Image (cartoon, rainbow, N blue to C red; front, side, top):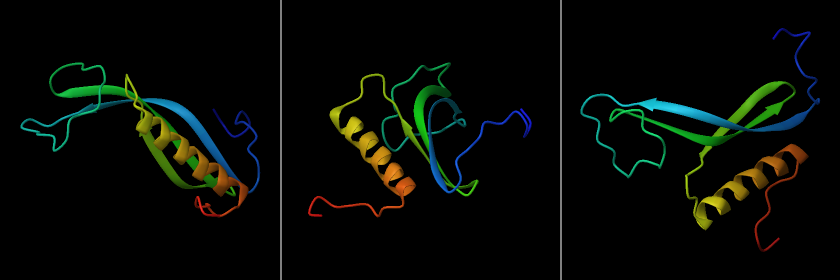
Length: 103
């Protein structure tokens, strides 16, 4: 895709939300400090899984990117984390400061 084929993007702040599949390979002797997320293992040294990427842009420049893994059987806490990340990104896009429950 070249610049002529690129989609038109809004000026100012905007947020991109997309599904992304990642594949991670581990070095020999790797020991995880925490249990690895559920996913499809290609072999004992790798893991493949999906996640949601939230990317924030300001006047065409990427200013942040967050990747949130999606488990095979997400918990309520996983859902709440995703909702919180989406909320923060959309408030940033709107130019509003994040609000606390007391506001």
